[in-house]
Amino acid sequence: MRRTFVAAPEFRPFAQMNTTPLIDVLLVLLIMFILTIPAQTDKVAVDLPRQRPGPPVQLEAHRLAIAADGTLRWDGTPISGAALAARLRAIAARPDAVLQLESAAEARYARFDAVLAEIKRAGITRLGFVGNDRFPI
Image (cartoon, rainbow, N blue to C red; front, side):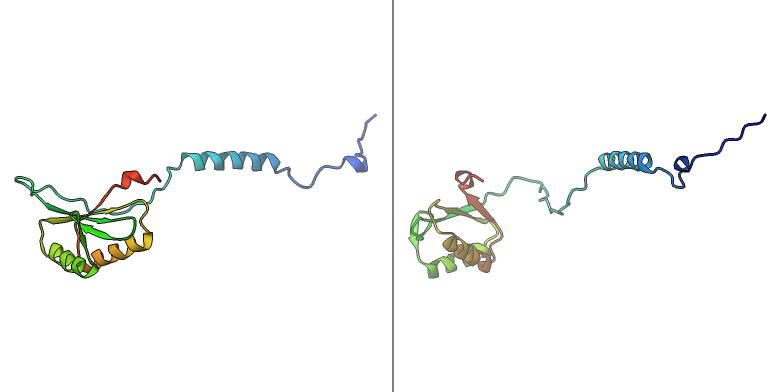
């Protein structure tokens, strides 16, 4: 006697493949791939100064200070806007001179920005900021 099995209608084989395990494996591989890729960093080209042979050059430093009320002082003495422009042009013409800019903590930013624009117009390339450690970031 030979037996034949007939599948009941509710137990028919699936016509589609179960892709859930495949997707899980692919996601794990994707995460591993992302973690092993080195992080891209932004690169900015910076021209570093080259060391010159011989003794170091002594630079003549001048300090321009902006007081809390907006008045300017050149090496400790008060100075007007017109005289400032003339002195800045004289500093720009000398290769051994450097300007140090100092601003009081209470000074208005608009005044500082105007002085900085005047320094840029004069063509000064050797500029340093004094007292930045007083302003926490």
